Length: 120
Image (cartoon, rainbow, N blue to C red; front, side, top):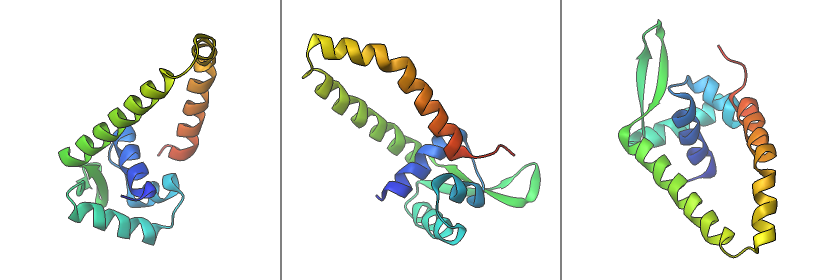
């Protein structure tokens, strides 16, 4: 799976159903490229398109259960990989990481806000 596909699934998991145009902006790709990407993920059973209850003209891209499961599996694998690496650090290095956690959390929050773009 491409990084853009994985990032798009993670965005849908974090933010819920989105328009293709919003996903394209969030992932930094063109709308036609996102349309193709969504079609491929739809054929793979990871996403589905549904009508927007608030605007019948709009189609939203939603995670399927398989898509949500894929995101959870990737997240668990990432956590496990970091846990193994952290076990290799010295006590001082672990303390330095712990002290940096508030700044890292803020950095992740800023990145998330930037990726999601303006709220509609």
